[in-house]
Length: 212
Image (cartoon, rainbow, N blue to C red; front, side):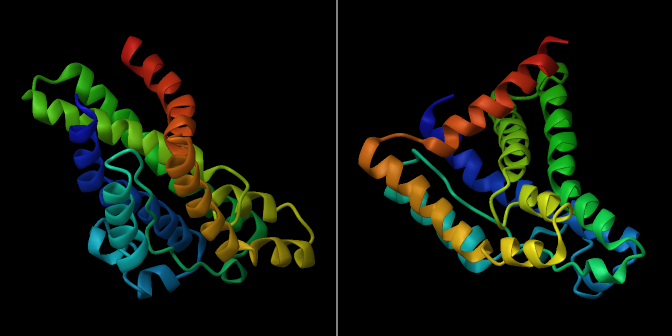
């Protein structure tokens, strides 16, 4: 598979990968007792309900064009969740935060198995492989304890309330820093830092799945 083909597949499939991630958050939030995601129409697999015009459409398109397919950055519209609506707010915060990465791990595993076991045209096999790598990569990248990534909310669930609030308030700056670092390392050093982290996290796990 060429770099160009992989980048195009990623541009097409990433909204679905991100939508599954947000659906995992929304579904578990609803199961935990917070009906806000349900009322906002987020407990759905429809990617349009999870799409953000800047983070899901403009950002990946611009980074794809600016780097010639070297790097693609994207994010979905985050699910709003109220831990205080749940019986055990801190436990709910940790579980709901982990639900998005877990959904990506499960769907990435399923796509990897389909790539290995099913006979499909080569172009579809390429798509399955890109979907598997992207899903597992998104899961692992979101576990980093950098606000607003999911790992930061898991950490916040273990901090005192005042410290947790201060920590999570850095979310906007964390998003801007991640974009700046990702684009900066590519434009200045031609180093795909996001891709390298993705490979180091997702490929070993996928190798285990495909070899089993």
